[in-house]
Length: 163
Image (cartoon, rainbow, N blue to C red; front, side, top):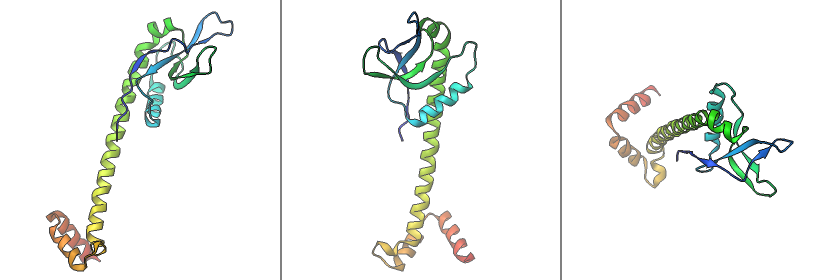
């Protein structure tokens, strides 16, 4: 499992939205270091929802069309002016990105541990119940159990005695 580590690399200069009158910028797109996974996006959305400060604006992973073009720029869409982004929102957005990175890394570690536990269980089941299916006979299953670590042999003996 690879962990997303997303960083803000800057602001796209060509992907801006303006007010209806066209007299000021209302939306920016922050350029990210890579395409965030769905898990990272969920983590960011959660972290942004937990962020609270005066004049907070909407921030989400999305895209904005380049002015007078068909191309789009994807990243973190922030509904604010460039000046307000720097003076008000930047530190809060950056902290939410870092918290989302930490949360995504934690989820990856949890998932890796879950898969590792499942693999150990599956290997034990295969060794105990399907050794004959590997071309051997019941003797191969007995040999596999004898080669198992002592704590597994004790657990298996208890399980067999109970059945």
